[in-house]
Length: 399
Ligand SMILES: *Cc1c(COP(=O)(O)O)cnc(C)c1O
Image (cartoon, rainbow, N blue to C red; front, side):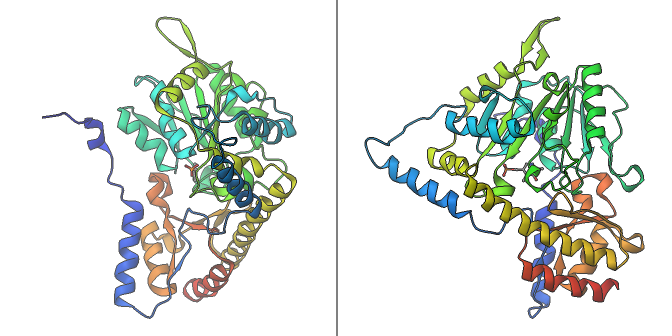
């Protein structure tokens, strides 16, 4: 019989979102009249910007002509898109990233998940806790052990340095699920650590487009010395509504090195290129054309409007929750609000209370890791109407 990868048996069952759905289903069945409002989702709800739709339509039409037809594109992504990324996402912030260092992909979930392919299983991995589950699960699939770096109110959600030397470190800023961005000082501390220990930082900046505080770095490459120690992941999913159309990119600086046999130094850029050209065949032309349109003047205005809408939701949620005397974090530079459950309730107890009494669905923090216990994540990705209707209901229960 064919042997499976037994590491998969060490994964916890995909428990969080199925369990939420189950509890919501049961409640709705017993209370058919209750109008449930979902503030748990990690998916966007507003339609694609008009500029993006226009660019995608044109690209599809071009593909239907013999002159405009394109077959396989470059695996790394079309140069027209990588040049725009280099100029607008980095150059405009004083960061020099060569288009050759950019790899366009169909999502940051895939990239943050696939990146472990090119690293040995003996590496020690540190992951901030709570975390996006992809970081933890992909390392378990490979058979690597992890050290959790707790982010809790006691340390202002600033993860401590690893106790044992870490070779690979995951940092997500602005953070999902806490909604808190890493400060420049915190990132400097991590870059210093990585340089001293020859570690590599995986910096997930999927929520970069939601940063509003001008003091918060948008890229880890704004920190001097980061080019030798970091890989950055960006996505068009959240800020431009691409969760359904799929486009993202990863930056791997050419100076970044890993250890080969003995003391041999190997280019991580070269390895990632080798991995992608073997296992990936590029993002479709219409989608990349749509992504490129975001960098036009109109495109930028429209995506800013999208994120502003969600950030207004976040502001409303924050204001209400604070007025109720709850401990509230995040929501100023990310579309997530991280709330401490009152009366020492567990995450699931608070979830159940809000579901049964307010008919509002959040996401239990414990589903993101042990340090998420006692917290609940509310998402700002819903409609304004839903957010405005949900707040007084929660007030009735807590206030
Ligand atoms: C949504 C999200 C992503 C982006 O995933 P895509 O595959 O690009 O849609 C990456 N990281 C985190 C932490 C996220 O929440």
